[in-house]
Amino acid sequence: MNPIALSADAGLAALGCITLNLALGLLIAMRYSPRRCWPHRRINLFRLHNLSGYAVLAVSVLHPSLLLLASHPRFRVLDLVYPLHSPSQPLENTIGAIALYGIAIVVVTSYFRLRLGRRLWKALHFVIYAAALALFWHSLFTDPHLQNTPLNPFDGEKVFVELCCLAIVVFSGLRWRYAMRKPRARAESKEPRENAVVEA
Image (cartoon, rainbow, N blue to C red; front, side, top):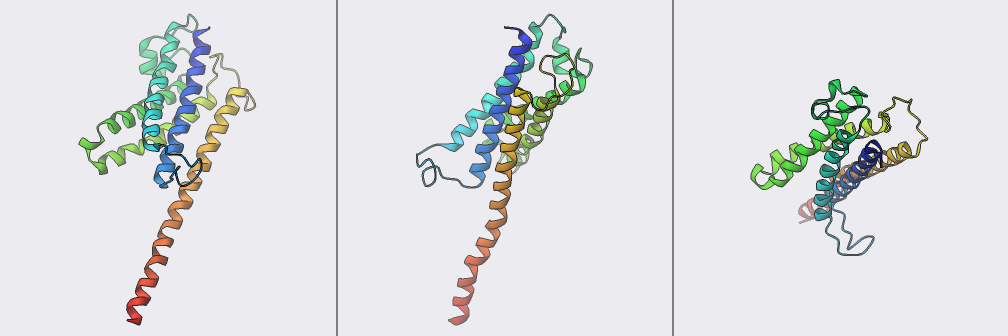
């Protein structure tokens, strides 16, 4: 197959992996239990979250590396590491590189999270949201054939990007709702105790 087409497929795979990774991370943050809830199976969400993170990094590195095999346009290693002057779509490629560097920071620091300490690791872990935003932008506005054709939002590949983006918006909304209900539940649980003290 054409290296450019393979690179585009790897990019979509990276997008699917980061969508899965973020969804799993948000479920973990909401204390979701697949044993108590659907699918009522013992599934280690934390392990799946870690594995999907490694998959995101691996496929994200493979995605631009395949461009080195293309004869036209001709990409050099420097064009991948510092794509501001790449032969095609330099702005989109630069945003894609920012996404890759952000993903690398999150995955590498997660591996050393015990040494870094929870507070520093958690602060660095939030970089994944900026990296995901950059990856979505790169995926949506880059021409996968590197021919600088206008964006077609109804193209099959772009529809996949849009669906992944929608999935993250939905999961983020659920996470926000969970965060809003949590303080209310704590306040309601304290009220009976306070009333019991007053009555005593």
